[in-house]
Length: 121
Image (cartoon, rainbow, N blue to C red):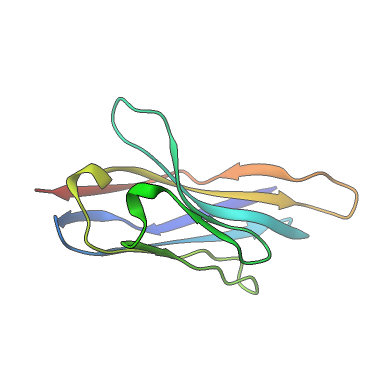
C-alpha cells in the first residue's frame, strides 16, 4: 500500500502565498506522474499542476505564472508554491501520484486526503 501525506494549506488573504507539500511512502518501486488537483465547492476536481518522472511540468492555465511545482524523487515529495493567491483558488487540494509498486505491477492512482486552502478577498 501507498500513502500520500499532505501538509500546508490554511487561510490566507488575496495576494498572499502558501506552500503545500506531499510525501509518498509505502510500497513504491517508482512514481510516474505526481502532482496536485483541487476541488472548489460545487465544482469538479481539476488538475492544478503535475510533474512527470522525467520532469515535464503541466499547469492549469488559471495558475500559470503564479504557482510553481517541483519534485524531489529521492524523497518522493512534490511541493507546490502558490503565490498571488486569488479567491477563486479556494478549495480542497489533493495530492496525486501514479505509483508502480513492483516490477510486475501496472501503475495505480493514489490520492491524499486533501488539504483546505481558503483565500479571503
